[in-house]
Image (tube, rainbow, N blue to C red):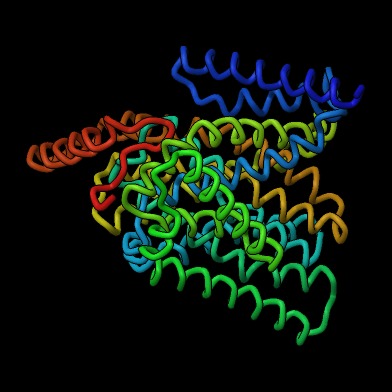
Length: 419
């Protein structure tokens, strides 16, 4: 009884604080994510008021938060839109890997950590945070923007790449044989292929099976299916986020619209818990010693992510403003970076504090970059003279993009036309 009472008190206090912080952020027009992280630091290891009774519950809630973030994002797009986006953005995935993985690998080698740590730190700097970016897109009402499918395509390719990267990294860290590593990789690739096939080929059948006139039944079936697929995917060393996203794109029509409305409040709650959980496991005292190299690496990879998004959006003829928005949106790192660092600390313990400081910087800077990259770039380039016709055309495109995103909300957002 005592443990249950302490759990209720801690959870109530946390959720109340999150609500107040979210209201404060809304009044000043700011994303609440950095405030959630700071709250986690205050309640976590070395903080002012460490939590004990609710830690396990928050850890589970954080996992659910990431899954729901990706599920809701997947519900915004159909399988055909995903395939088109992947085909269009395939070269952008290669550019993303080169520009953002190489700085991490180079930093590890310069620090003398060895090739295995270099592979691990390359993953830390390469993968953007799907969870943070999904939340930011909703907060900034950009789900209907023309550059959003570009961002989504890069994120999906990064998440799917984890099905190849994580087994390879695990094998390197464990020193397993080539045959053992190959078997793990084949299992992961087979799982991703099977889930993709079902989502793309039998999405309508899944939607009909899930559909229900009862909101309660629809909520239970969609949430249960998503958690089941995410859990199976993670057990087979495939990202749970990928599984949740694929469930989202497998659902279409009224089922997708109804599920979005029902799951949005749960998404918002558990997403906030996820960001608090990240802060809980960051000891403020461990940050200062690694702050300078983390800042240097964050600066470099912020620029490379912005360049990645700009180049990718330019390929599909998004306006200049949209290109800058795409680049700024991709800056945040988060859940995958922490997972990768956690795997690697056994080989190189120093990678843990560095990765934590690096991610903390970029998970705070990410929402700011998403919001301010485009206006800052506009000011810096305002002195350049542009032909009148070009300026008018760009203005028309930007107006169309703004109109497309005007009706979106932080929850379900504007559903594409085919929905």
